[in-house]
Length: 200
Image (tube, rainbow, N blue to C red; front, side):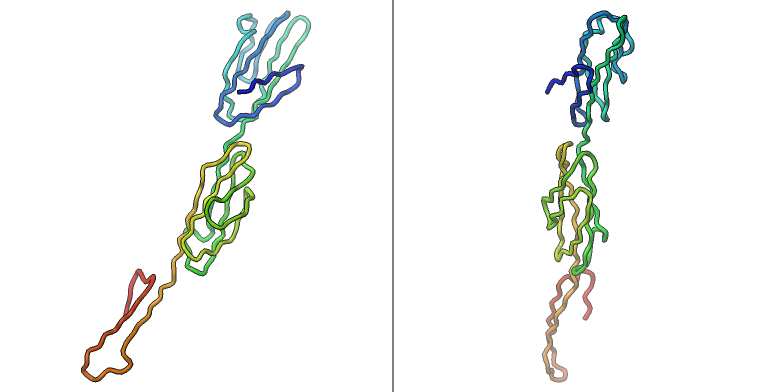
């Protein structure tokens, strides 16, 4: 990875993705009474063995590490800020639940968590790329909508929602126009989407 050095007392900033390790290294020289590295890196010490050291830290949130050295001539401070970026995730919901009847609509809403700043739709007819938004859809058939969020924290896993569209049942029936008394005849019928019952 890159090496970042805090120079003349200013604060330098680097970015990492949550879960990544960072090595902090320091060299302290001159007349030193004690030194400390906060938060929680190096307790106050006057041991020369700790004046040249490398430690690994794994910050879970943005953290500024400060090296403070005290000597007969005064104090010296150096700091470095580790900006911890959270990988984005996206949550997708439907106002009508996961099913509608053909001809009806539902509002698909999405929210991005973490460090994401745009949305890309990988499946379905939505083109809105805002990170927290919604769009009304009226699919004629069962449709799956999938999206990924991206930004400084990386790219999210693809998230999908499927809206099942139930079709209205249809039926046609064919019978002879005229039938002689006591003659048998045939009734022909055809249905579509009638998956619960048919009654003639």
